[in-house]
Each structure stands twice: as C-alpha cells, then as structure tokens.
Image 1 (cartoon, helix red, strand yellow):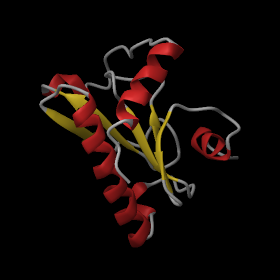
Image 2 (cartoon, rainbow, N blue to C red; image 1 turned 90 degrees about the vertical axis):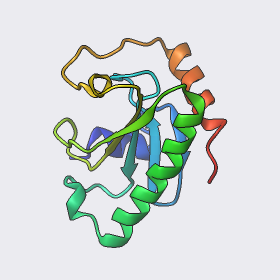
Image 3 (cartoon, rainbow, N blue to C red; image 1 turned 135 degrees about the vertical axis):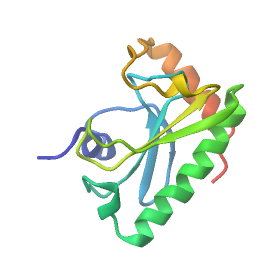
Image 4 (cartoon, rainbow, N blue to C red; image 1 turned 90 degrees about the horizontal axis):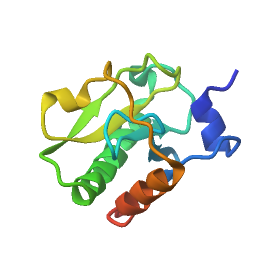
Amino acid sequence: MPSIFSKIISGDIPCYKIAETEHCLAFLDIFPVQRGHVLVIPKKEVDHIFDLEDELFSELHLFSKKVAKAIKQAFSCEKIGVSVIGLEVPHAHIHLMPIDQLSDMNFTKPKLKLQPQELSEIATQIRAYYTP
C-alpha cells in the first residue's frame, strides 16, 4: 500500500511544493512544528533512510542542503534544524525547520494549525530563495 508521501509524489494528494528533482521532493509539512517546516523525501518509496542506495542517500542530503539554505534566507533564524525520525510515515524523510533554540524542534509539542493561505505564502517565500 503506497504511503501518503507516495500519493503526494504521484499527485493524488496535493502539497505545498518547495522544490523537486528527478529523484527528490521537498514540501511543507501541513502539521508543522515551526513555520517553515519542510519535509524532504526521496521519490522512491523506502521506509528506512539508511536503506536508501548510497547514491540516492547522498542526493537526498545534497538536495536538503539547497532547501535548507532557502529556508534560512526566507526566515530570520539562528539555524536550520535537521531531523530524521521516521516514525510517522513509512517513507524515508528529512525534517528541516528554522530554529533559534533546541526547544523549537520539540516534536511532542502541539503542531501549528496554519490556514491554506498561510501555507501557500510560506511556500512561496521559501521558493523565492531556492536555487537548483
């Protein structure tokens, strides 16, 4: 059964796309921990990130680096936090989010409830700084 991320990749479920390559996709988390919270995924459905082939693993991280730089420019923040948890969706993914302190990446706190217009504006803001 395809994961929700595979359904996003196929276009069956819409997303707030930030960037895309032949093998990777970055989009906003619709239940973000922080404004600007982006998920970066391989298009190949693999559950565990360390099960990715080396080439795709490297490509995913290099793509994440470009997306992280765009987030950093779009948001006034100290750092871009990076996390790989992999418990929520059985599809390898990297969380990127603007942070100023460690508690900004607390995945146990209540998620933000942003309106579609706000998510669209955030995506546009980040895309403006993305360089392929």
